[in-house]
Image (tube, rainbow, N blue to C red; front, side, top):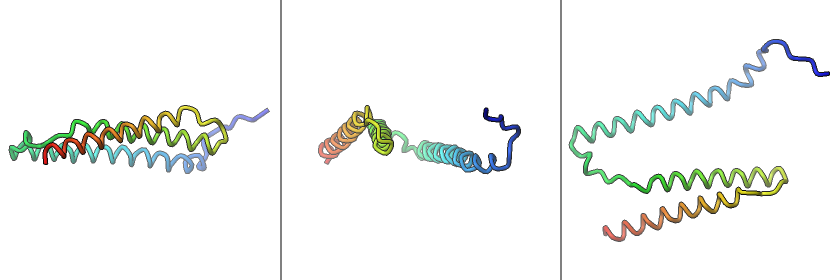
Length: 115
Protein backbone atom coordinates (compact mmCIF):
# COMPACT_ATOMS: atom_id res chain seq x y z
CA UNK A 1 0.00 0.00 0.00
CA UNK A 2 1.27 3.46 -0.89
CA UNK A 3 1.04 5.98 1.93
CA UNK A 4 -0.79 9.21 1.17
CA UNK A 5 1.49 12.21 1.26
CA UNK A 6 0.30 14.59 3.89
CA UNK A 7 1.13 18.20 3.39
CA UNK A 8 2.81 20.35 0.86
CA UNK A 9 6.60 20.46 1.01
CA UNK A 10 9.05 23.14 -0.08
CA UNK A 11 10.35 20.80 -2.79
CA UNK A 12 6.92 20.84 -4.42
CA UNK A 13 6.99 24.62 -4.55
CA UNK A 14 10.44 24.67 -6.16
CA UNK A 15 9.33 22.05 -8.69
CA UNK A 16 6.28 24.01 -9.84
CA UNK A 17 7.85 27.48 -9.62
CA UNK A 18 9.49 27.44 -13.10
CA UNK A 19 6.18 26.37 -14.67
CA UNK A 20 4.31 29.16 -12.93
CA UNK A 21 6.96 31.70 -13.96
CA UNK A 22 6.77 30.47 -17.55
CA UNK A 23 3.00 30.91 -17.52
CA UNK A 24 3.31 34.43 -16.13
CA UNK A 25 5.98 35.28 -18.71
CA UNK A 26 3.80 34.03 -21.58
CA UNK A 27 0.82 35.97 -20.28
CA UNK A 28 2.92 39.12 -19.86
CA UNK A 29 4.33 38.74 -23.37
CA UNK A 30 0.80 38.46 -24.79
CA UNK A 31 -0.37 41.55 -22.92
CA UNK A 32 2.66 43.57 -24.08
CA UNK A 33 2.10 42.56 -27.71
CA UNK A 34 -1.59 43.49 -27.50
CA UNK A 35 -0.69 46.85 -25.91
CA UNK A 36 1.88 47.63 -28.61
CA UNK A 37 -0.58 46.75 -31.37
CA UNK A 38 -3.17 49.01 -29.72
CA UNK A 39 -0.67 51.88 -29.54
CA UNK A 40 0.25 51.40 -33.20
CA UNK A 41 -3.38 51.47 -34.32
CA UNK A 42 -4.12 54.55 -32.20
CA UNK A 43 -1.11 56.36 -33.70
CA UNK A 44 -2.28 55.46 -37.21
CA UNK A 45 -5.79 56.71 -36.46
CA UNK A 46 -4.49 59.99 -35.02
CA UNK A 47 -2.24 60.61 -38.03
CA UNK A 48 -5.02 59.73 -40.48
CA UNK A 49 -3.10 56.88 -42.08
CA UNK A 50 -5.25 54.02 -40.76
CA UNK A 51 -7.15 53.56 -44.03
CA UNK A 52 -3.90 53.53 -46.03
CA UNK A 53 -2.42 50.54 -44.20
CA UNK A 54 -2.56 47.45 -46.36
CA UNK A 55 -3.71 44.76 -43.98
CA UNK A 56 -2.77 41.28 -45.11
CA UNK A 57 -5.88 39.13 -44.93
CA UNK A 58 -3.78 36.03 -45.53
CA UNK A 59 -1.98 36.34 -42.18
CA UNK A 60 -4.28 33.75 -40.61
CA UNK A 61 -3.12 31.24 -43.23
CA UNK A 62 0.50 31.81 -42.24
CA UNK A 63 -0.28 31.52 -38.53
CA UNK A 64 -2.49 28.47 -38.98
CA UNK A 65 0.04 26.77 -41.22
CA UNK A 66 2.83 27.33 -38.74
CA UNK A 67 0.67 26.09 -35.87
CA UNK A 68 -0.44 22.91 -37.66
CA UNK A 69 3.12 22.27 -38.85
CA UNK A 70 4.46 22.63 -35.30
CA UNK A 71 1.78 20.35 -33.86
CA UNK A 72 2.40 17.75 -36.54
CA UNK A 73 6.17 17.83 -36.12
CA UNK A 74 5.76 17.58 -32.36
CA UNK A 75 3.51 14.57 -32.75
CA UNK A 76 5.90 12.86 -35.17
CA UNK A 77 8.96 13.51 -33.00
CA UNK A 78 7.11 12.35 -29.90
CA UNK A 79 6.01 9.14 -31.63
CA UNK A 80 9.49 8.46 -32.96
CA UNK A 81 11.13 9.02 -29.59
CA UNK A 82 8.65 6.80 -27.78
CA UNK A 83 8.97 4.08 -30.40
CA UNK A 84 5.27 3.99 -31.25
CA UNK A 85 3.42 4.42 -34.54
CA UNK A 86 3.61 7.87 -36.07
CA UNK A 87 -0.15 8.27 -36.56
CA UNK A 88 -1.82 11.50 -37.64
CA UNK A 89 1.24 13.69 -37.11
CA UNK A 90 2.40 13.19 -40.68
CA UNK A 91 -0.98 14.37 -42.00
CA UNK A 92 -0.77 17.51 -39.84
CA UNK A 93 2.76 18.18 -41.13
CA UNK A 94 1.60 18.01 -44.74
CA UNK A 95 -1.46 20.20 -44.04
CA UNK A 96 0.82 22.78 -42.40
CA UNK A 97 3.24 22.65 -45.33
CA UNK A 98 0.35 23.05 -47.78
CA UNK A 99 -0.96 26.10 -45.90
CA UNK A 100 2.52 27.66 -45.91
CA UNK A 101 2.97 26.93 -49.63
CA UNK A 102 -0.42 28.53 -50.35
CA UNK A 103 0.48 31.61 -48.31
CA UNK A 104 3.80 32.15 -50.10
CA UNK A 105 2.25 31.45 -53.52
CA UNK A 106 -0.49 34.05 -52.92
CA UNK A 107 2.04 36.55 -51.57
CA UNK A 108 4.18 36.14 -54.67
CA UNK A 109 1.14 36.48 -56.91
CA UNK A 110 0.01 39.70 -55.18
CA UNK A 111 3.49 41.26 -55.32
CA UNK A 112 3.80 40.32 -59.01
CA UNK A 113 0.49 42.00 -59.87
CA UNK A 114 1.29 45.18 -57.91
CA UNK A 115 4.79 45.54 -59.37
